[in-house]
Amino acid sequence: MAKRILLKLSGEALAGDKKTGFDEATVRAVAEQVATIVKDGIQVGIVIGGGNFWRGRTSENIDRSRADQIGMLATVMNCIYTSEIFRSAGLETEIFTPFAVGAFTRLFSKDDALAAMNEGKVAFFAGGTGHPYFSTDTGVVLRAIEVEADMILLAKAIDGVYDSDPAINPDAIKYDKITIDDVIAQNLQVMDMTASILARDNHMPMMVFGLGEENSIVRAAAGENFGTEVIV
Image 1 (cartoon, one colour):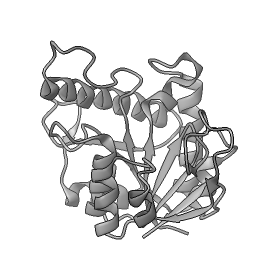
Image 2 (cartoon, rainbow, N blue to C red):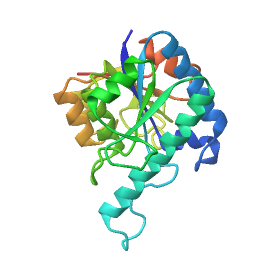
Image 3 (cartoon, helix red, strand yellow):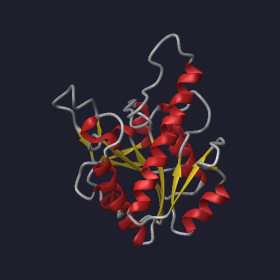
Image 4 (cartoon, rainbow, N blue to C red):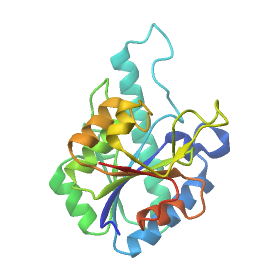
C-alpha cells in the first residue's frame, strides 16, 4: 500500500451530471473516501483540473497566456470549494498555489507541503505550475515528484486506458497494465505528452481508474488494479 499519493480529479468530475460548476453530493462522496484512506495513515495530495469552468482558449481574441491564467484560477476555485467540503467531512486541509492569491492560499514550498501532509492534512495543489502552456497533468506529476509521492491516482470519467477512444470505437481494448513508454509511443493521452515524459523520466507510476466505480479511490489507494496500472 502506498504511503503518500497524489490524486488527480478532473473538474468535470466535480460537476457530476450538471457538467459545469459543482455538485456537492459528488464532492462529498470523494471527501468520504479520502477520509477513509487518511484514517488508514495514507498521506494525500490533490490536484483538480478546471474543466468545469474553463476548457482553454475559446476565442481567437483571447491570448493563449491569458486563457491559461483563467484556467489556473478555475483550479483555485475548485480547490477552495472542495477543501471546504472536505473540512465539513472532518478533514483538515491546506491549499497551496505557485503564485500569491491573497489570504486564500499558501505559496507552495516542498517543506510546507510535506509538513502539512505529515500532520495528516490533505494538501490541495491549485494553480497548476503557475505558468501558461502547461496543463494540470504536468502540474500533478511535478507536485508528485516534489513531495516524493509513491504514485499518482488518476480518477477519470473513463475506467482505464484503452488502445483507442471507446466512445468512438466499440471494439477498443482496455489495458490492465501498460508501460509509460508504450503510452508515449502510442500517444494514448493518459496525460499530455509533457506530463507523460516527466513521469517516465522521474519513475512516477500511475493508476488510472473510473471515479464512478464503487469506492474507487479507496481501492486504488490500496493497490487494487480495477482500471489500468501505468508502470515506469
